[in-house]
Each structure stands twice: as C-alpha cells, then as structure tokens.
Image 1 (cartoon, rainbow, N blue to C red):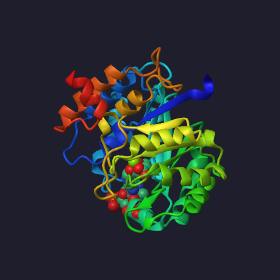
Image 2: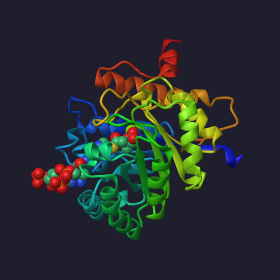
Image 3: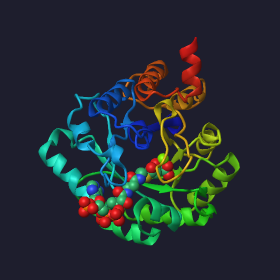
Image 4: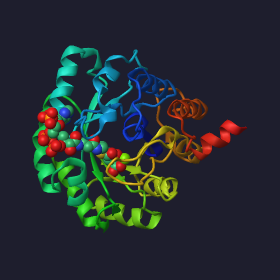
Length: 313
Ligand code: HMG
Ligand code: MG
C-alpha cells in the first residue's frame, strides 16, 4: 500500500559525524556513505557546506563527494547549506563533477527560536529566513531540490519549551519559499509522544503532512516512540542515523538521532514498508554491520538497541 511507504533519510554521515572531536578521514566518510547506500539507504545526507570554523568536522565534504564510487541508481545525497557561499560551493562542485548532479540535493536550516538560531547561524529566525529565501530560489532555479530543517520544534536548549505556533509559522514560510519538505527537528531530544503529537497537529494546519518529516534526537530515550507518533500522525519521512550517531554542536548534551536499525526493527511486521534501493527496502542486518563498523572506527559503542541485540545473537 503506497500510503504506508516510509522513506528514511539517513543522516549519519552528517548529523552523526559533525559533532565528533577527532578528525575523520575523507575515505572513512566516503566508505560510510557507500556502505549505507549499498545496505539500501536511498537518501543519505552526505555532509555540509558550512563554515569550517563553526563545524570543522564537515570541512572537506566536497572531497568526500568526489571520492564516492558509483552508488546504486536512485541514491539521493542531500548536503547542508547555510548561506549563498555554501550554495556557490555546491554549484562549483557540480560544474566540475557533473556526474554528481542527479544525486545532489540541498538542505537549508533554521529554527523556531532566535536563541538557537543565533548559536547555530549567528542571526535571528527572521534574518535567517530572509537570507535563505534567495538561496532556496537560486538552488531550485538551478534544478536542485531543497529540503528545509526547523530545529528546536519542542524545546530549545536556551529558552525551554517552544510554542507550536512558532514551529508552524517557520515551517509555512520555508514551504512557501520552495522547500519540497520540512524536517521538524527535536534537536535536544526532549520531546514525548504527547508534546510531539501536539506540535504536529499545529504544524499540519499550515503545511500538508506529505511535506513533513520527523527528526528526533534520542537524549531522553523517546526518539523511537516519537517516530511511531509521527507515523500515526501521517508523516511518512523519518530522519535516522546509523548506530544512533550524532548530536548538534549547538545543543549541549544532546545525543544522536534515533538509530536507523531501531526504526527498521520497530517497523518489522507492521503495515509500514520502508523504501530503499534494494528489493525489500533497507536490509536490517546489513545496516547493523554498517553501524558496528562505523562505531569501531569512531571508538564508540553502538548506540542502537536493535543493533546491539542482533550483534550479540
Ligand atoms: P558568520 O561567522 O556569521 O559568517 O557565520 P560570516 O559570513 O561572517 O563568515 C565567517 C567565516 O566563515 C568567513 O571566513 C567566511 O568566509 C566563512 P573568514 O573570512 O573568517 O576566513 N564562511 C564559509 N565557509 C565555508 N562555507 C560556507 C561559509 N560561510 C561563511 N558556507 C555561518 C555564519 C552561517 C557561516 C555559520 O554560522 C555556520 O557555518 N553555521 C553552520 C552551523 C552548523 O552547521 N550547524 C550544524 C548543522 S544544523 C543541525 O545539526 C540541526 C539539524 O540536525 C536538525 C536538528 O537536529 O534540529 C539539521
Ligand atoms: Mg539533528
């Protein structure tokens, strides 16, 4: 049933790695993306074209992209872009490496509070939207699909509980500027099925649910419940990170995204089908292996519960 087709956006190579302290070699990042794509992940967020002073770990995303082998047909590779300078870098990359053009998409990002936006983008929410408008237009004019992120949709690390109406307003604005999808980020991972559900009910009044995605960090252990809540509210696109890697450098103490393996496991035997480039979608066991591999590379424990359980069998 196409109404139950779920798309996972694998954010491990970006959200998962951006917060790591030690430098991760280009070839490890490229191998991670490649392994994820071969496990069936159709949408793999591959990196960021942000200031290397702000997020050093994402420097060299262009080298990562140019060193990728050919990936399964239909693989999509969104990259984060904060401003025109970032978009210009994407344009230069595509001019020099036109084979990447069919895969590359752009993700812009802002938030529901000025305090978080200042920490993340050095401006207020209205300023960020004003800056993003021409960036979104020039990307879409060039034929690139643009996704928009709204951070701190439930709680802000600087100002606490966030009003759903603010999330709705920013989401509506990004959609009206041309974003094909709005990913709602519980950056601090404080959301619960109750608060996430209430937020979604409000945002759905302004943006059709088909255009919404859920992005849940797991700081308080509620990410998988929030994913299931989002699905029950009609959302069919979920951001997830292999091995539960990740965190935002501007959200102190926040842990990684919901683990991809946990989402795949939770949806087994359900009416939902996860889309992927392999027949049968994304392969859970292969995803577990990718999670174990990258966690070893980073010297971390696998944060995915299903991944750990399957590995121990
Ligand atoms: P700024 O300091 O106000 O910008 O930062 P600036 O224009 O004054 O530039 C400062 C320096 O950065 C200059 O270099 C620029 O050239 C350079 P200098 O002259 O000092 O040598 N610069 C750039 N370099 C490369 N690429 C660029 C770029 N732009 C400027 N695109 C700025 C403003 C937006 C640049 C900065 O705040 C920034 O890069 N922020 C990005 C922060 C970030 O990546 N955060 C993590 C991703 S968001 C997230 O994790 C949340 C999410 O997962 C959803 C959720 O969980 O909620 C998506
Ligand atoms: Mg995030």
